[in-house]
Image (cartoon, rainbow, N blue to C red; front, side, top):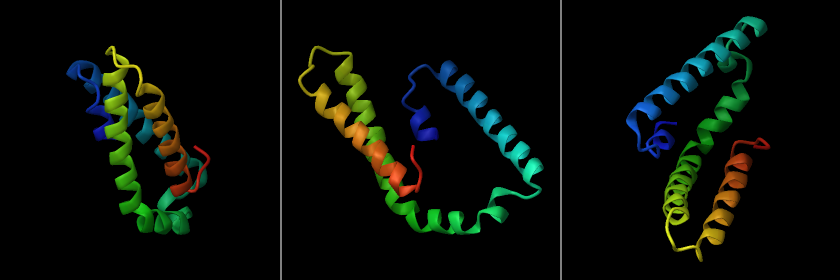
Length: 106
């Protein structure tokens, strides 16, 4: 998540958003744990083991996604529009690949 936050150039905005996102994430995990009477790690053992096996490949996809997103943002703000469609298509394909790798629908 920090790698995605690094795409934000304004450090104040980045810090404020990360603080909001992380506190909300922690609050949600605690609420779910309270409702389900167990942590996700204890309830979803197979899911966590599966994610461990896929971590390296998913990490590589995330790096490609971050690089492509950064490139797309630079192109979007410049006069070079010919590559925009290809970069956007690549980003959409990466979202689908990550979703499949996480065994989710996005």
